[in-house]
Image (tube, rainbow, N blue to C red; front, side):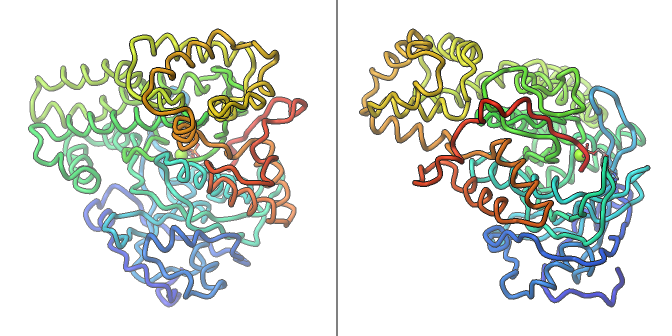
Length: 495
Ligand code: AMP
Ligand code: MG
C-alpha cells in the first residue's frame, strides 16, 4: 500500500493505540490481493458504526476490506502479544495474519478497532503466510453474527472479501480476508508479552490504557490494576456462562485468544454442541480435550490466574498487600462463575428467581441430558412447548416417552408456583433459548458450497441465525437436530 492509494470511504480514524502505545506494536502493511471481490458486507453493523458502505462502490469496498487500498487516516499495525497455548507459554506470538487499520468511534460514542484478518505477513508471522482461506473466514462471519444475535459478547464481522489468490493448507483453497470489529484487540496475552519481556512500567502503561479505553470508572480505584483484574474476571465469567448456555465450544481458549473486553474472539475450530455431552470437543488438535465444552469454566479460571500473574508487578507497585487480594479474586472464580452460570440456566428453564433446590435441579438436568443423548438446543424449546400443552417435540428428542419423567415432574412442580401462567412462561423461555443456531452439518454444507463458488446456502444460513428466537414457517430443517448418521464432527484450526 502507498499513500497514493487512498480509499473514498471516510472512516474518520482516531488511532489511540498507535498514538500512545509506541513499542507495543509493529508497523505493518497488507499484501495486495490479485483480484479482490466482495463476498459479504454487514450493512447493519456498518450503519451502527457510522460507516457509509451503502454510498461506496462494491469494487471500492472490496479493495478497502482486503488491504488493496489503505483508507485515509489508517496507521496499519500488528499488535505484539504472547500467550499460553494448550498450557505452554509462547513468549512471542502477535498478529501474524492480522492488520489493525485503525480505530473508529461509532455515533453512539463507543470506540472500535477495524482489523483485517488474512491480509498477509507481518513482523509476527514466524513461518506462517499471514493468509486466510475462504472457509474459516465465512465460518467466523457466520458464527460471530449468530453469537451477536443471541446477545453473546463478541467481535463482529464487517466484511469478507475473496482475494483471488490461492492459500495453501493441507490443500490449496481460495483466499479471503475478514474485516473484524472489536472493542479492542487487547488480550490476556498482550499483558503476558510485556510482563515477560519488559516489566512493571509497561504493565502499568498497558493497564492504564485498557482502563481508559474500556473501564474509565476504574481509573479512580485505589489500585487500578487490581480493579482491572476484578472487572475482567467478572466479564470472562459472564462470557463463558453465555457460551455454555448456547452450547458453544470455543475450541482454542489459549490466553492469546482471551480479550480483556470480555468479547468472544478468534473463531477458529469453534462449534456448537449437538447432543449434550460435557466432554464434547470438535477441534482436531485438541486431542486431550483441554478445551472441551464442560472444561471451559476451569480453563477460564486457569487463564485468569495467568492474567493475574502478568498484572502482579503493577498491582504490587501500588500496594504489596494487594497481591493477596489478587489471589483471593482468582480463588473466588469457581463460586463467582457458578452463580452466573446458574442464573443463566434458571433463565433457560424459566425458573425466575433463585429457589432452594435449584442446584440439584440443574445438576440432574445435565446428567439426564447426557444420559439420553438429548439435542441441547432443542431441549429448552421442547420444554416451552410442553408448557403450551404440546409434548410432541420433547418426545421426538427422547429415546423413550418417559425417559426424563422424574426430572420433568420436578421442574414442572417448580414452575407451577409462579404467578405467571404457562403461556407467558413459555414465551419468556423462548426469548432466551435459541431455535436456530449454526448447526455443524449446516455450516459445513454452506462452507463447502461457498468454496465451490455458490454463496447462496451460506447467505441463507446467515439470515436464519441472525433471527435465532422466533419460529419461522418453512425453516424446520434449520432447527432440526443433526441427522443420526452425521457422525463425529471435526473442526480444524487451519485458518
Ligand atoms: P490462533 O490459534 O488463530 O489464535 O493463532 C495463534 C498465533 O498464530 C497468532 O499469533 C496468529 O497470528 C498466528 N497465526 C495463525 N495462523 C497464521 C498464518 N497463516 N500466518 C501467520 N501467522 C499465523
Ligand atoms: Mg488467536
